[in-house]
Image (cartoon, rainbow, N blue to C red; front, top):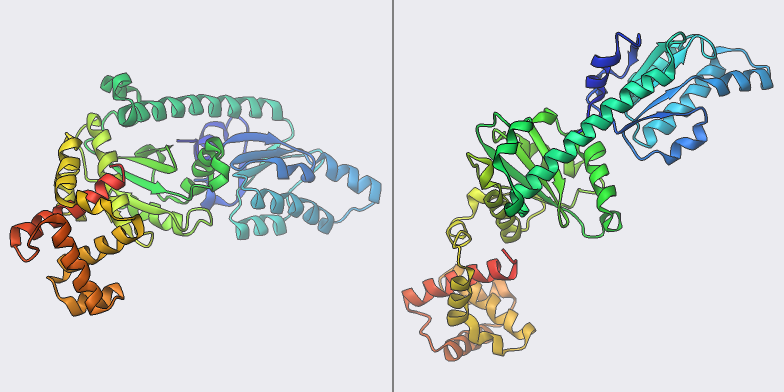
Length: 397
């Protein structure tokens, strides 16, 4: 859930005499750790979300070595740091002023405001190590709490046998009146399957874009998916996630789905199943795939004994499995369009890019293999249900 820079400042601003000079609009930035540096060339090693601290020792050395003493030199020195921090996703910068850097030029303040990068100062008499220890302790404690909450929800969804509903009292969700879920399915090759790297990016980059109170949701990563558990079923949350993903270079092609609502935490596994169904059935990356729009799928997916569904599919369409795969898919596609168009042969030929005679051959062959009369209304209903089941079974839902 990650502490925001705003939260940290609220705790340490007074005792450490911090002063915010620029970047107020970005105080929602999440802070992953506190990072001390005196060398801009080392900034490339940060991983994103760090709150940086510097004394400006190298500025003093450069000034003495080069015998430079003008405001432009300080501007260029600090701009190099700020550009590097912005490029590598730091959450903000604290400069300990008074000895090496006396005061911050207005030109740097303006530049940070332009970049929407939080810039703070702390007077020299305040010890940097004390600030770093205090903030480090805050972040460590918050990370522990976040890990505990993620583990709690992970068990609620995927490990029901280890799940204790009473533990919700120890989370910000203790007073939730309802729950919903958003799933983001991302590219399988993202960050070379490094789950820790994906989680870090989601927490300190993607989630930064969400204009939502961090206590209103929890996010976790599971099998090529980001799972968001949403408190009180915020209707705007799916749109926030969709907008954030489309604006992110790593998630712009991700598919997003949203579940229905549930009253209790014990139903989270059902929400996950419902959001997964919406994802697999619609598979549209250009819109939010909603469970509420699935029609008959909502009934089929909640049949507890999946063997019943498999048996129905096998009894209805199973004999088509005798064909080789490419041919079988052509026949299935023709059947799907046939049912959708009410048996209009010319329309089927156009939509399937096949000759009219090819369509007629396929329909006759389907009737022959299945031993059916496709003009019969009940037969068509059974075939349509079987095609629905094909998507559920092949999607592993």
